[in-house]
Image (cartoon, rainbow, N blue to C red; front, side, top):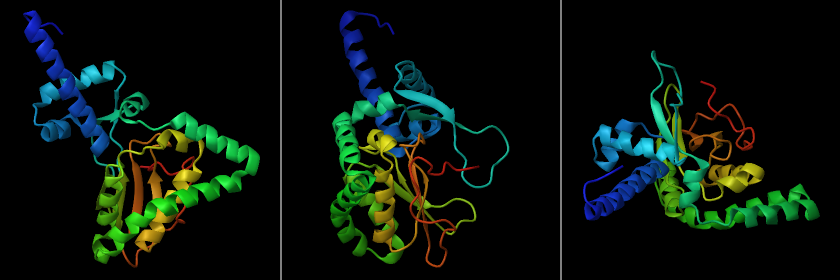
Length: 245
């Protein structure tokens, strides 16, 4: 993009990068988003947001996809949403993915799959101690939201909302995962996390989608009291359900 005058061009280019970072960060924090949602969150016109999205798509940071529909379908074409690519997530991640994957692979080869499972459970149990304090101090009806806040403090950009459709429960959504790339190879990390969520919330939960499986957000269904899901708590990230709708 060209601007008149060298100084204004440099200044405006810096502003453009800053605004694009805000758009990408909003997608990271909130998950796949429509241009209208982004415009509202970053306080720009939809036309301006679409211009930044075009640049982010061109750079391989963001990709467009049809919006995933949970529950009953509505008529018409699904809304177009924009999600971060692996490259886009890498720009925010400072984790040592390769080192972690190599270490887990070595554990698996030398001590067996059971050792990987034990490591994943021990890691999540230690991480969950701080979450347990927050969750148990909340009223029962607020515990999913309390867990979302605790996860967000650890960089998971988590939210809680009522489950759509006839389901009697909530959805715990994690829009970011610092170990998503490692979990692609070692779904035991996701399985251990699901087990911990069940323990913290005192109910069976169902993993509907995961970033490691290629979904735009990790989604866990949490039933309200007396409405247990039909399936078991622990769902492997390699087979974790993309919503069949």
